[in-house]
Image 1 (cartoon, rainbow, N blue to C red):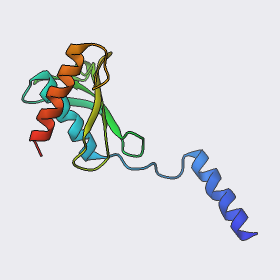
Image 2: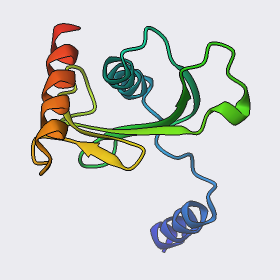
Image 3: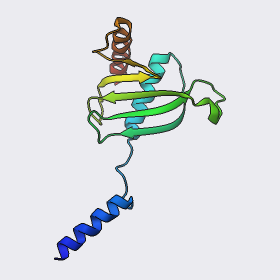
Image 4: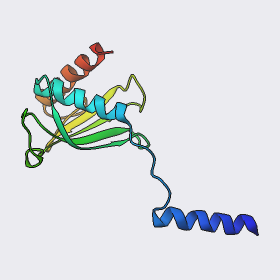
Length: 127
């Protein structure tokens, strides 16, 4: 009986949001920043909101960013989403989307497939 009460209490706490969510992954987030910098050809990137999802399949991250050095909160209106083979290094880039355009090995647009292969090659060199 105690096990049932404990399980019910645990389930209630989880539904109410009292249990901590799985931690974000700073490594996944930095990998996505590297994807953005390589794609945009910029030496630095200012990030706004950053989220990572190491527990999803495929694991990934998304963030808002600005290429302006003196970025203000209203400047973080660009978004990138990255998906990787795994949540630990080497991550293995699977696909990424900037704004509403996606880049990956299965994209119909040849230029988008090419840009994906370029960024993937650059990421592999950074190991």
